Amino acid sequence: MEVQGKVEYIRSLISYKGDDVQSVKANFQEAVNDYLAVCEEKGMESEKPFKGSFNIRPGADLHRRAAIAAQQRGINLNKLVKEAIEQYVKEN
Image: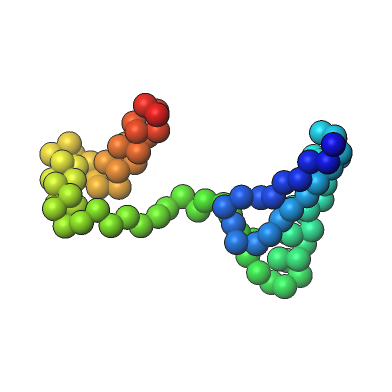
């Protein structure tokens, strides 16, 4: 049975396939290495699925309330949002 896959969360298409776990793993590694070689050859930076930062638009009222809550806790807004996301992900 042939299995197909692709690297998620990047714009570039990196796909691979194989008939068993060993061939899927080997073809995945080859596909990623090929992608990295093409990036190097073209002088491009390779994409990363998540860069560790993103912008949100909570609206003015929620932004104000969050900033006040962070200030009251003695932390910055970024830390407050990070803690809130960690708590949400942990609960779900």
